[in-house]
Length: 609
Ligand code: F6R
View: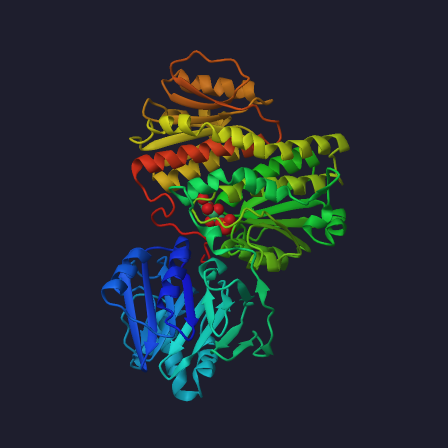
């Protein structure tokens, strides 16, 4: 949700900011802008559309400066337009880039208009820059003006701020939206994500909630939420600049689909000794926490929620521990009742999803004593708010449609099922069997990836369709949901998932030759039930594409096309069956010519409500 980058250096920062924006584009891509201070003046360029547009604008009419801020936008308040693009400027004096939402912007706007401030955009952000300008009239210096102005703001923000009155100062603030400082040699940068700054530094300071940093070439001062001067550690990132390159792949999404065998092996790496899961993988006091819990509550959004849905089946079947799951945005406003000694499990690729974070805080308010995060970003807010953590180690995921994050989340969740299950119903033998299934996953997924060409041909049948249904049963129902989500978000085909047994209760009315029905059919205890559901569809002229275990007998039915999936072990088969559905969505989107990595209206890392 919007990407911020900024810098103060002894060289022109414009190329660095532009490269940073390119790397942050996954966070929003409806407009982009950049401003620098040069000769006591703010120079700004903004363009509707992607960063490429801004780049062309700057090529045609370059600007330069040793201090600058830049932004790529995902619209919340005000449509995508050049006027609404950041940076926003107050009276040619102060410029601001913002990620987040200012909730009391309407009230502030009214007051500021009465004070004579002119508004040039429909954004909530513009009130921030005018508020700082106003505060400067009654305070000494930019830092104090920012501190005073922030007290008036309600909502969430990460901010980059500069003023012509102090052209050697960059201010960075964080409350509710992520922000890091990149520490260079004689230069500093700020960004929403480390990935933006990897070409210039691998050393980062992660700002904490409520921090305000005053950055100049010679000095970095950080004030915490209590306005105390604090020292924050500099951390060395293990990522390199090319970790976020597309390599030989046409799209990030395809690259990330193909990275899944390696990503899953990373999730498992070092977490077993002599084939036994080590509980300290979740944190040093994990065993003590697991000893005390009696139930699980999972909170997540989108694809991560689908991972949680699969895990609920696993927790209840394999561990026999009660497990609830809820979409985070519902949980946070529902007044839920938590059973005593419930372990809150949040799942998030980014660790910055506003709803998931808020749901976790709500659960804590409701008395939850233990929180565990399954996450892909080590320094994220969710990780910092949790007592226990299991990192998925998928590596940076740039494609907006989540792929390797999902399968590594499932792998990590199965590790949690083992650790918790030991205290409940999971036998030593069952644990060993699941462990060996987990270690065979990378090889199985390699085999599934070989179906790529077959699935690409299959995808041609979808290119002209408006709708699709996805069916599954048991743990594969959430996989059908994930398949439908992938298809709709990148190909814009309306897709819905149903538990196959539910068809006859309504959706069967939709079936005709124009509605492809994608079915996930592993060889498990529900297969016979599923076969009956498949027949119900075929008997009504429905066209089925069935991803089916290779060991099963052929079906002679002209309405049914079979894609044979390599035989997989029982419990972990949802992880394997995810991959063909990702490939299907990918190829349909490529055929339709959509923007696969940056689908319309979406952005990664949803840091607003
Ligand atoms: C879909 C997708 C989203 C995210 C959701 C939660 O492909 O990526 O549905 O899963 O926005 O994001 P995280 O996992 O970062 O909390």
